[in-house]
Length: 220
Image 1 (tube, rainbow, N blue to C red):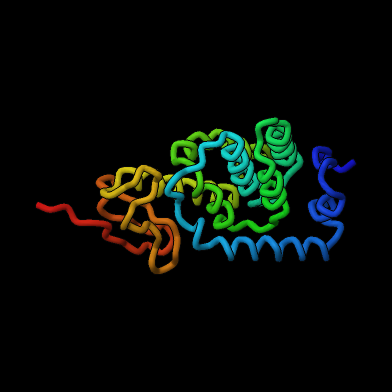
Image 2 (cartoon, rainbow, N blue to C red; image 1 turned 135 degrees about the vertical axis):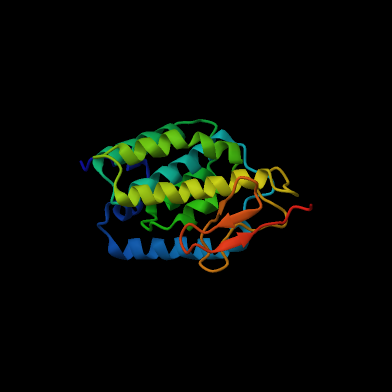
């Protein structure tokens, strides 16, 4: 048996083939479905949800998506796969888990891409306080095999920037409490990266292209 795939015996064999890379046609078809689903959901989940999902099972699903994103940054190692499998087992064995989450889990695990945007769609649906709780998990995932690689370090920085964005939004004028400012956008207009905000929340800087953005000017 291939290491790390025992837990997927309860899934259809066609999906198992996709995960193990033995059926390229199925893999292509499923990836096309994933992209189609993501494209159709752009307007719904490209920004933080007005009402975050509090369901612990869903938060666990998002945790898996995030850790999987970190693990994929430099190809999944056996130690990382074992951690992913264990988290999936915990979720699937939860009798209170919404049955729809099983489908979401399949979509997450079948996505071989390394773009943060796909993970952001899940992170946007939960409360900002849950984002901070994920740090222990993502750091352990990055360190699971031979230390933190350069690609994993970059992936962690992208997540850190995202968390900073959500937490800063809570303190913004007009914040609705979900980690989403009603007016202000914290995305770089030049390269679309997540911005880093300064201490007084008046200015944001792009960590990639260096562009400076004025968020608001304090009245004297």
